[in-house]
Length: 85
Image 1: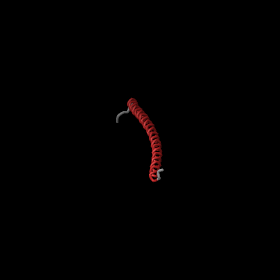
Image 2 (image 1 turned 60 degrees about the vertical axis):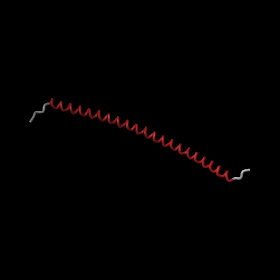
Image 3 (image 1 turned 30 degrees about the vertical axis):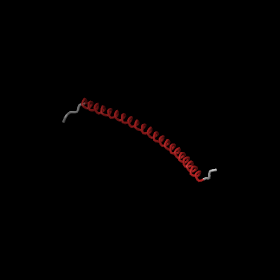
Image 4 (image 1 turned 180 degrees about the vertical axis):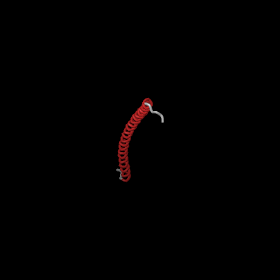
């Protein structure tokens, strides 16, 4: 059986410590990426809600325009049947 020296143990512990340090750095990078993606998602969600509001406003305006046109068409249709002086 091989004799395990303190120097060998020290080198192994240094390698393990370096590996763990690398994992921690990678985890920090992943966390930053996730936070960045979350922020972008919230921005997209805000844009989506803004677009929905704009579309609702456009639909309201379109409804008003259609109502006005129907009233105008109804008045024109009625004027054809009314006697002219």
